Length: 231
Image (cartoon, rainbow, N blue to C red):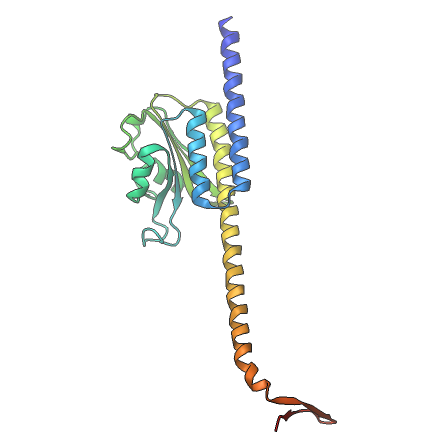
């Protein structure tokens, strides 16, 4: 009887995980603002999996936030007050440095610590003192790592194989959503540039118009056309 209850609970948890994956997928296809997308995804994962904390880091490729391109993974979304505080402070971790996020990004491989206090390469965050286990999953677009999903629990050995599998799927969906949002932003900027060029062309055309209004028409002959000015 106990085993039947355990099986039922496992099936319910699995169904919840898959439902969460579906919701993240829907958000990924409908939200084109990167900041909004990342925060909603982090909140959803934390709520549905009952985690202590969820954060999403993105690699600083162009140095917009840190002025050091390619060196840092910057926290762009974080749950609860801890997330808000860290984002406000510009929290970042060095790629390849002594943190699970930095190692995850540099190696393009997941990092799972079932007992966080025993993890050699881990940033001990004073804002999250109750963490007992932690997992970092790479966010990849093709072969390029663009960031990492950080998940923390107050329980030791909190992550089973199903959790790792589903969260890896969610990380892939987040990566796809980031790329969709980037392409949309790129298209929007291209459209804005085209509109600016068109407005510039119109201004130049209106500037030339008074000169052209002095023309009565054109005279045509075998050599071509010549302008006829008003007298």
